[in-house]
Image (cartoon, rainbow, N blue to C red):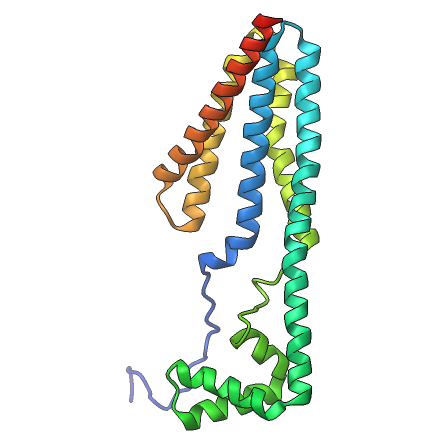
Length: 242
């Protein structure tokens, strides 16, 4: 057929890749929490110390100490938390290996039952279970029975480093402002810059997660303002009392 589409032509099949937001959940959670904590806690600490006395040295020392201690604390906490998840995953996989070794027929029927419950016909469910088991029986059970996938696998060291780096990145702006600015301008500038960064972080996290940027920005900014305001008030009261 001249000038038209020839149905006998073989069209190349392009690989279909979809980018879903769930793929960002692991690193996004650690990065956003770390950056928010670093920014809010360090800014609040600096404002509290700056409100309590009139020397720049203690303010800078408090900011640096807060940044280092907070980053290490985030790393340790994330490592312990994710390690517990990894231990649970490994225990479940070890149990699954034992069950596959001792009673493979029952495990095969369990896998086929999962596919039947998802809507496949008994014949197709049996065929799918057989073929997937022949390819990677433990992987099939891990994915479809235990809900474990490569994207959700626990990675303690990765989570720890990501949290520490994100906290340090969030804590750096208030520390730099203390270094660069006279003490008289520190409080107002840090509060303003921190709120602006918090609004931006909240909007970015909401956009990557597919929710409202405005709501995300307001949520993060509000609680950051509360934290800084309360800490500055405590520093002012204790400084006046001293």
